[in-house]
Image 1 (cartoon, rainbow, N blue to C red):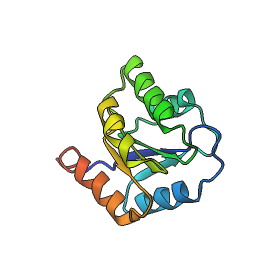
Image 2 (image 1 turned 90 degrees about the vertical axis):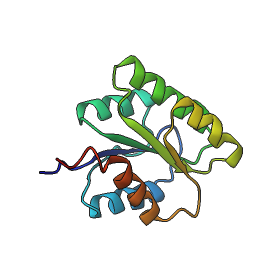
Image 3 (image 1 turned 180 degrees about the vertical axis):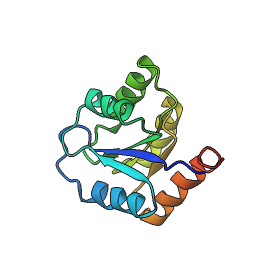
Length: 135
């Protein structure tokens, strides 16, 4: 028996461009995952609450606003404070290569930069949870 991977896809902050997040959410869904898309203008608190309520395995953040350092850090901090730091955080958007090591140091599992294919995202999520979704 296998459990479906549960993914929350979120758009934190004031960024109003969500086409990429919707494309990723659909690709993950089409790959057999349960996907909850939170919609635009979510606070880190709302994203973490959704992830906990939905018993998510992973949270994917799409950040195009330039506030990625603050937003990722806050989501990870809130997950830890709620005892939910087993929820994996990944993301993508307009994130400079120089910021990726610092984000990884904060606990972000993976950053996908512009040009990443939906298949590479699907494959990464599947590979990350392959061991935990098979019995």
